[in-house]
Length: 173
Image 1 (spheres, helix red, strand yellow):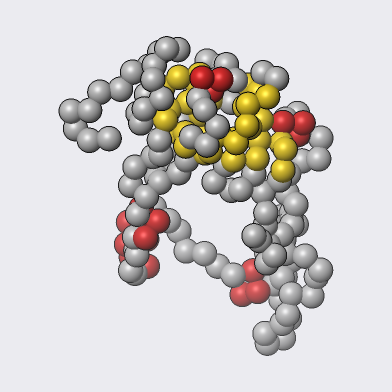
Image 2: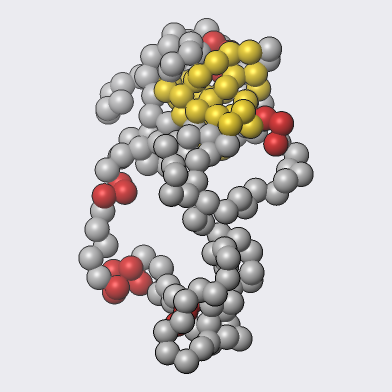
C-alpha cells in the first residue's frame, strides 16, 4: 500500500491487499497479517516487519495458517485478518555497527555463559576454557534453550490447535 490507497474493513470486502475480513472469507493461498487468535481479541499473529501468514486450508470452523516459523496452526474462522504482508521487510538487514549504537537502542551487552563464574551460570567456572559439559543448551536458570530443544509446555491449552510444529535446530527444512 502507499499514501492515498483505501482499504475496507467489512465481512463483504473484496480480497484485495489492505482489506480486512474474517478468515472464512479468505481463499486458500492468500497471504495475511494482523491475524486474531480469538474473535474480537485483537491481532496477535504476523505483525512484525515483513511478516505474513499463509492460508493453507479451510476446515470445519477453523482456518489453517502457515506462520513465519513454518508452524501450521488452526485459528477459528470467525477471527479477522488483513490481506497482504507487513511492510519494511528489509528491517532485519540493518547493521547496528558498533556496541555504542546498540546501547543507544537500550540493548545491554550479552555475556557468554562460559565467561561467567560457576555460581552465575551452569557453564561457568573451570580452569582455562572449558567445554559445555552438559548434554543440552540451557539458560542461566537451567531451562532448555535453542539448538532444537523443545521449550513449549506439553500441557498448554492450545496444543490441539497446532497441526505441525515449527522446525528447529540443525536439520531445519
